[in-house]
Image (cartoon, rainbow, N blue to C red; front, side, top):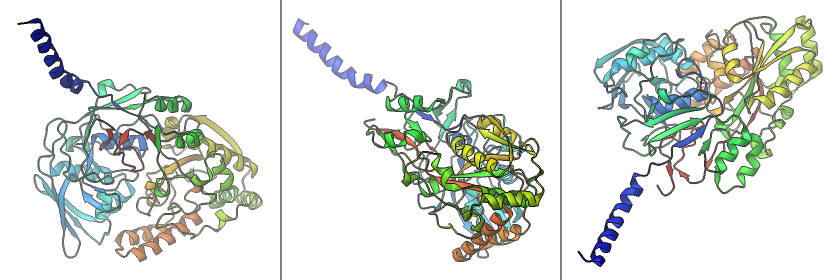
Length: 524
């Protein structure tokens, strides 16, 4: 071979090899910083949003809402309803597998529904209306109702609070209050437990057994196509550090943009700040331990209604004016379909003098009021401190016990040792009574606070049975009025808490909490 031919051959080889070499370069993982640390892996045990985000990676649901809120099949091929709407027949998609290779069966789904329904508010209502659930084949099952229930698919496809993720029957046999010991799912990702380092990172890999639906992703419905071989929840507690990491491309996505940085992030072309409005906003609230004195007395609870002045509370977030509501008293979130003024009088007429009078009337005698405060939550910390100051101003002897949210979340499950917990709920958990935690857990004896107003029980049942939207709205307003009268919770205010992500990410689904399918990096 001549020298020229040899060199030409080398050039041809290099030209042929280059595309393969580029194709074989591993794509950097998709990295997300969640607002809280992942502590609990089981979505039936806790309503924590970080656990829900984790669960959406590794498990799947029977149905899911699209971007318009219409319930679509997910693991289901479809369903049929009898003429009297008391018998519901379901068929699974063919070929579904658990991540360990076992087939998904109807018995798995029935066991999962029973376990979830033992704890979830809407799930409990569904099971109470059910006379029988049974498999009719390997991939089919039937649900028979003992009375009308208008929210069957809304229950089985719900995305709020406790989500009915499907698990293998042997895991679903775990008592509802006990964590499952294995993470075996049929969702788009695999959990790499051996790489999980609490306080550092949670690692996922693309699930090769997952079979996305054929239709495009739409809301939480449609095809959950994964474009990254690896994804990570990365722990960066310091807000300035996480923002710097995002701008430098070391991470891709922050679940909750740090409030102090939102104005500057909005101006930076390297990132996208989501709108985070309406049902995606945050609802701040005080939960009161109604199982113990003094807040088992409604007069004490009403004193806090009069004490809280929302404009001062939401001002503590430091957010731009277009991202806060100066006053929002509906428990269904302002600017959503069920928003109502029903029963909001005491909240609108904040009065420290009236609050002090109620304390005297209730016989309050300066007993310490233990407030559990999560200092590590950028959302809870500022509004909680203002609310505590307002409680002190009406004469409450506040014992402020400051710790991290994980500790608060654990302590508040006890009926003793605390009186008040400031917290935040996501708006997508609150748009109507049967998912709203301030309503659906009334008299259920399972949710911290343990409020119970017997007048709300028949209204919740009537709402669950009512198919007419206008009549549902009327029932929702009645429920809100009673919830404010009983003081199920004390609203602190409503404000936006948008996500922020790198601008080169395309296909990001704004579902209210992060979902990592459908996302591509521009140019990949």
